[in-house]
Length: 186
Image 1: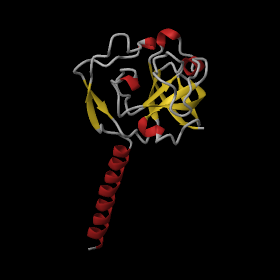
Image 2: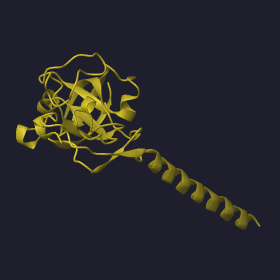
Image 3: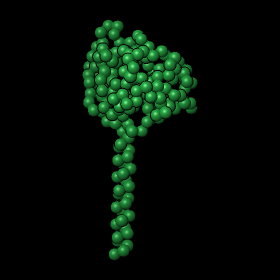
Image 4: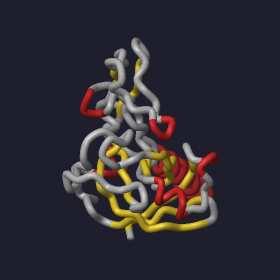
């Protein structure tokens, strides 16, 4: 009976450990919360600076109300200047920011209803680190409209960064676009 009990306890522990590990992996993911259909932007209304993507008519885009718990992200390039591809002024301070200022927009889940507004984050990528200020949301729930410069919604794991961030990470102009990074609150 003792050997059976010990075997049962070990088996239960193995099952529980496996379950906890799988739940931990699942907690790090973020699944789409919906979709939206792309529309044709009015002529001249979608700013394609820095190779920004315009919505395509009829294309279906995933939307996300969350971001992964693990702060692994894709760094994208954005201009927060007036007339830049970011659209209107930043959500945190209702201002525009020059391209030579290290600022970022975080995906909706990480932005957390402005909880990270004007806070510093540390971005690690390309073997370097840089500190940047969160000034905006990279909206993962909406897009393809005037407010979002007729661009698709952001992915759930996007850190949209000014050229100053890319420069600090030592990424040449030709290589800018998408870079795997990690980030943390400063």
